[in-house]
Length: 410
Ligand SMILES: *Cc1c(COP(=O)(O)O)cnc(C)c1O
Image 1 (tube, rainbow, N blue to C red):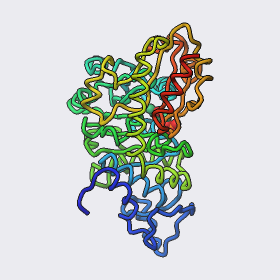
Image 2 (cartoon, rainbow, N blue to C red; image 1 turned 30 degrees about the vertical axis):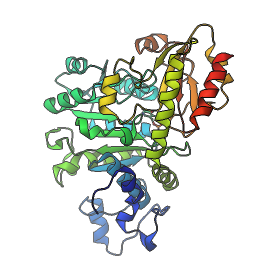
Image 3 (cartoon, helix red, strand yellow; image 1 turned 90 degrees about the horizontal axis):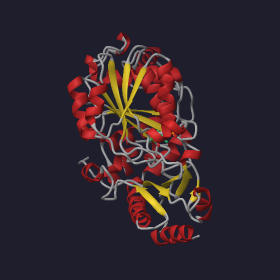
Image 4 (cartoon, helix red, strand yellow; image 1 turned 45 degrees about the vertical axis):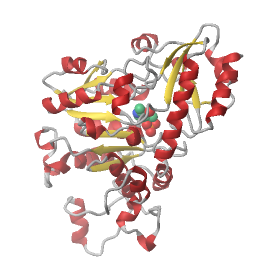
C-alpha cells in the first residue's frame, strides 16, 4: 500500500496482518499458551529463529497488533508493549544497563520516573540529573561509563522543552543510547526519530489511549542506534541481524523476565482509542492554547507555563519541533486565591491526577504528584507551591473558557 498520512495509516493498521474473517479490529486473544503440531517449530520460536507465539507474558497476537500500530505511528523499526508506561521505562533500563553504568537524565521529569531513577542509583546504575533544555549541560555530565541519555519532550508540570535536536546530535557522536519519553507530545505532535532518538517510550495510558480507561506502555526502537557497538548485549541475543539485538534484549530481559505484560482487553481499549488520536489531540491543543492565553491576561494568575505562549523560554524550539504546543499547561496563582478553592470552583475541570484524558483535569502539583519529592527538589525543578497543572481535554472551548472565568472571579 502507498504510504499514507497519520490517521489513514493507523485506522487500517490491523488489516495489514490479514486478520481472520476480515475483521477490522484485531480480535482480543485471551489464550495464554499456543499449541504447535511440530515440536521443532516451537523450539525455533524459543530460539528466536522463527516468528510465533509461545506464552502470553512475552507476546500475543492482540498485543502484537497494538505494537505494530505504535511502530507505524513512530515510524520506527519495532516496539514492545508493557502493562504501563512506568513498566516500559523500568524494564527497558534494567534490561539494557548493568551496575557501574551511568545515565544522564533531564532533571525535569515525571515524578515516578524521578523516583525510579533514584532506585537505579541505589542499585549501582548512577544517574546524573541536568537541565536538558541546553545540550551543553548534558555534554558536561557525560563520563566514560555513560551509556544512555534520557529526556522528556515537554516536561511536566513546568513545560520545559528539552534541547531535543542538539542532544540527538550529541548522542550520535558519542554513541550513546538516546531514550526519549514522547508521552506529552505523542507521535502525532512529534516524531523523536527526526531528532535521532534511539528508543522512544510512550505511556499509552495518556494521549494514545486517550479515554482514561486503560493503562499501557510501549518502547519503540527507531532503528537508528547501532547495537553492535553496545557492550551490554548478551551473546544469545546476537543470532540475528544487529538491528534486532536491542529490541530482543528488551523483550526477553525486560518484558519476559520482569513480567509486566499488558492484558489483551486493555490492548483492545488502547487500540480503539488510538484511532482518533490525531483528532483529539489537535482539538485539545487548540483548547489549551486558548485557555493559557486567557489565564496569561488574568490578574489572579501570576504566571502561565505553556510552550505555546511567546513568553515561554523554549517557545521557538517548540514551534520548530512540534505540530502543536501540547495540551498541558500550568499556572502559578496570585496569593489572593487559594489553589484548592480555585480547583473546587471549577465545574467542568475534574480534580484528578491523570493526563491525556478527553476530559479536562486539574491538580495542585506541590501537594500531590510532587509531594514525595520534598520542597527542596521541587524548588530546584521550578515548581511553585501554588502551582496548578491542567491537562486540557476536548470539551467545547467556550464552555472551558467560561468555567475558568467564573472560577477565577470567585
Ligand atoms: C504518565 C507518564 C508516564 C508513566 O506512564 P503510566 O502508564 O502511568 O505508567 C511516564 N512518563 C510520562 C511523561 C507520563 O506522563
